[in-house]
Length: 295
Image 1 (cartoon, rainbow, N blue to C red):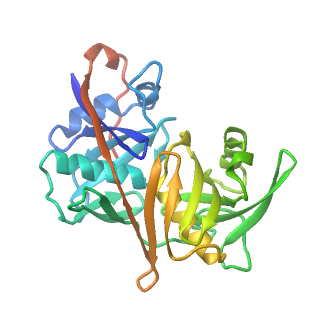
Image 2: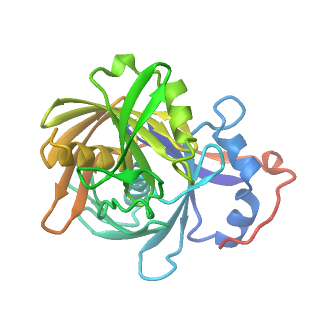
């Protein structure tokens, strides 16, 4: 039997496996791509946007987070996932209120803490506008960020690309109700201008302090929230003159407060994460699992 914990950040939900004390067996038994896809399936499995493995730190962090999308691809990092991880650590007495924790990810080390109001503050690091880092073959435009025009279903969409440790394409629109998220999101995620695919976000700027966003996550499809995407939207809106450097990002699952602190070029994300339930996977569910060595 393998215990897991279900958490969500604004409806972006994750299955968490704590591998800090039983690392080798959990990883060898559970980290099979086909199995993880099945676990995330909402009809034949537990159901989630992704799976988080909390692992011992590799270098100088407190823990190392691996996050697997529902299609079994691995993400560099995830803002909502980190908030869920921090909330799990707090709920299980592994960290205290207002205690800084460093989470190692494939996108670098991320500092976070949970405050007295139960909201989780995450220093998401600096945005990157280098097309080679994002990566994208879009060219840098007049705002100093990669941009391009996409023709989809008789619509001409202007998009901007930013990295928050993972790739994002941000499409400003006048009305989110006009967006065919399933069709447009899938097409843009897989556009050959993005060699590693991309997350896609459609944003409607209400005013300089409020931005509404629809999310298509790479490897997961439509989700109710995306933390790194919220940061990328705030940065893009600010650069092209549509928002302040601090704004509320209203996602289908709720709101995040994002601030771009330009004095040190870091982005601070504030938002909730909530425990849903704890359960176990039955042994028979784990039949015919392929073994692999964690890298």
